[in-house]
Image (cartoon, rainbow, N blue to C red; front, top):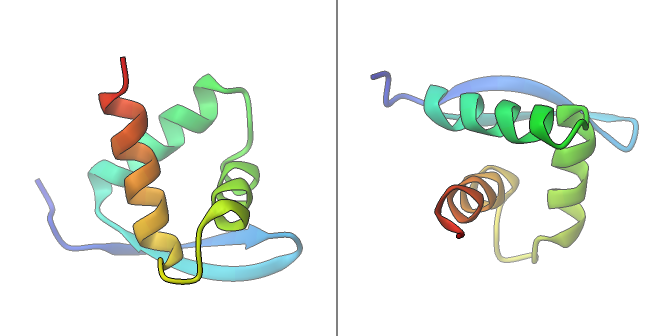
Length: 72
């Protein structure tokens, strides 16, 4: 298990940004996007739009993945 975050580039509403997540979160995030038949950039943009100003994008993605994996 690689616990060090790795940067990946995403495009959110036409703007490039980098997000650092651990490999396990990237894998789960990609799987959730794939299962929902959405590109990962679209899902990331949705998360970005719904997060508050007190939460960074990487944290918002981690929380989204955690909630999705632990919800019934």
